[in-house]
Length: 287
Image (cartoon, rainbow, N blue to C red; front, top):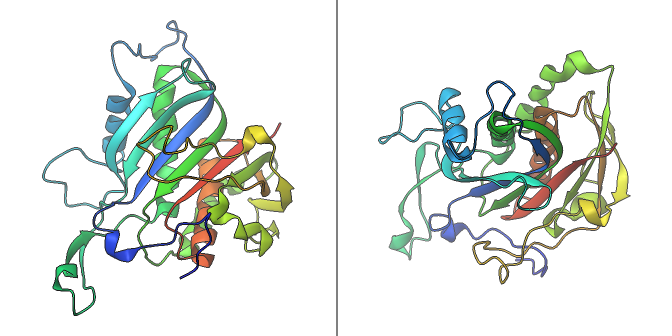
């Protein structure tokens, strides 16, 4: 087993004790003008209920027990609106991915306690676009959103095949916007640092509309930023930012385009680095 001090590798037997979790943080501005139609006062309603209702409507999540028979994408955990209280962070959402079909697994024959069942998590690359879109839709209920960056943190990911073709198939949604492009920068923690040094992300056009450029130095303001565990004890893992990242041209600066870029990089990273269990990744718009 590799022993890179910056990287946490998968520990398969612990997966049933630590379910796969994803946190998405949105940065930018939220202009709350009560005169605008459809704007919610956060004293009357909270982001959790709005986000949950949007996910239920789209059949991405459910708060019903027992759970509906159809497949879900995530499990509700926490959501918070932070606009005006935590710098340029508008809000954050935390969900669990262990909502898929129940599957059996077996551990070493000498350890009968390793026989049991667990819920196979949703593929994170496939979960990010609906999760980020649902989050953005919910934020817009509280005001006009100007999104400048998105940061994703994943912990205790489970081993599973990652169908790269499914990520490529998402591009058809953007094929009508090929006449415009928006610049962005993708940064990540040391878990994905090998992507730049080993050239694991394809450089140049990917059949358009997503186009990666050269490896680029990441300005301090755009580095991934996750509190250390001793500062925020609820964070289970210490993330170290990589100082270089990837420039990318998006077909448009929208939540779904940014989410697709994050999904593409995440999928490619986990295909090439299948032992990684925790990571943080961020996309920032570059004017």
